[in-house]
Structures are given as structure tokens and as C-alpha cells.
Length: 307
Image 1 (cartoon, one colour):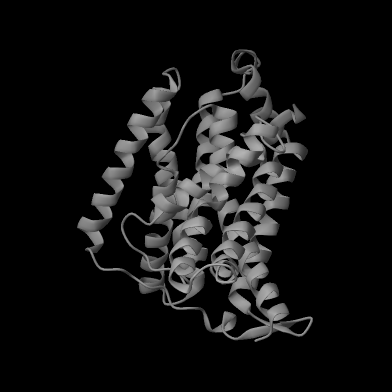
Image 2 (cartoon, rainbow, N blue to C red; image 1 turned 120 degrees about the vertical axis):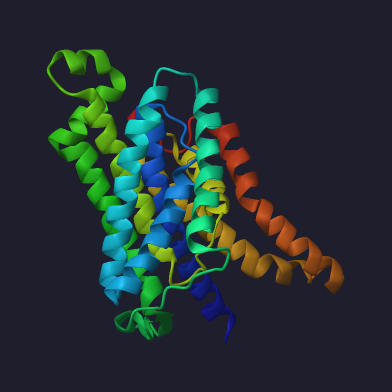
């Protein structure tokens, strides 16, 4: 494989990883930015989406039922979570949000370990998404391309919902002045619950899309949650547009760094030193990027409201 093909392939892999991050970041940035609620359990909803997809595939027998089970299960858990736990914490400070949702992370990790066991699960790749497709002469896996297309469709749909519908108008108004919106006869609690369910559904979608290429296991939501938090900080909290662009930046930087930094270091370092330093620097790359963005634009690249 020549250098151009390697770069192009890793670039597409970075976009695919970025799109997965966006599916998580879109829900988290809405809940964090609009409802002002810090939800560390968002990664657990991603994990539950993956487990629900495994159940849907086992009992339904195909990928369609896996997707349906992931979306319905995640949205239902999100609604129950909002009603039973989150709604009681809206008036509390962010530290209480962090402590309560961290407890939920531990609870859900142990729950899936008790129900499904400690072993990992693997969702088979659907037959219709097997093989590769030619993109300007580059052979690329169909399923990874499907993830990219799905993420772009979700980005366009989310932008339309927030900026072009009555529901989006109510969500934006409720985030600025919930008392006034409630005085106009709008049920703010129902609105918050709906928003939380949408965020949970998107996390479940990310879980089922990741399931055929990653192992499904307890605790799989924590590493991706950290990367998702980096995305919403870089993009600007509460901004769907910012989450989309920041996810692409983080996904591409992380993938290219892990693929090529060790090789670049070998040009001026001993092989053993480069092999050890390359992955370490690559893993720090997105955090260095976040620090640079915050130093230049403290509210992120595309803050909500354009401030």
C-alpha cells in the first residue's frame, strides 16, 4: 500500500471515528448546553445501546431488529432516568450532577455484568454491509462508509430540528427562560424529558453502529465519554454545529496521530524510543488540541449563539 493510499484510508477512518463521536456528542451537548445538566452517564447509555442491539439481534435474527432494540431501549432508559433521577437534580449545582451520574455509571456497569456476564459480545456485520466500495480508486469498507453517511444525516436532521421546527424553538426558548415558557402553557418538564430521551436515543444509535466493529463489554462507555467531552468543549457547549466539526477534527487528529506519529518519530529517534513515544504522544494529541483551542477561544470554536 503506497503512502497516498495509507493517508487517504486513515483520513476516512478518522472521519468515521469522528462521526461516531458526533452521535454521542450531539446528545450530550444538548443536555449539557441547553438543560445545564452534567450527565456523566451518557457513556453508559451508549453501552446499553450496544447491549440492547445484541439482544435485538439474538431474538430478531437480523441487524434491523438490533437497531430497533438499541434505539427503543436507549430512549426508554433515558426517559426513566430523567423522570426518576435527573429531574430531581435540575435545581442542584453541577457537583451534585457529577456525583449522581458517576454513581449511575458504576450502577450500569455492574448491572450489565450481572445480567450478561463478564464476557464480551460481538454483533455480526450485516451481509448487506460486507465488502468494500471504490471511492476514487480507493477500496473502503461499506459498513464504515455507512457510519459516515448515517452521522451526516443525523447532523442535518439535528440542525433542522433545533433551528427549523417549533420543538426546536421551544427547546431554545426553554434553555434561556424556562419560567416564561412555562407561563405560556408549555410543559417544561415534558420538554426536558423529551430532550433527554433524544440524547439517549442518539447515544444508543452510536452504540449499535459501533457494535459490529468493537467488542460489547461492561465499561465500554467511559473511554468514549472522555473523547466526547473533549469534542463538546472544542466545539462549544450547546452547539450541534460545533459538535459536528469538533468531532471530525478530534476523530481525524486522533486516528492520523496513532497511525503516523510512531513512523515519523523513527526518522530521528531510535526505533525502541519511537515505538514507545509515538503512541503516548498520539494519545495526548487531542488534549493538546483542546488546550490550544481553549487558550485562543475559551467558549469553543462554534459556541451556541455565536458568542
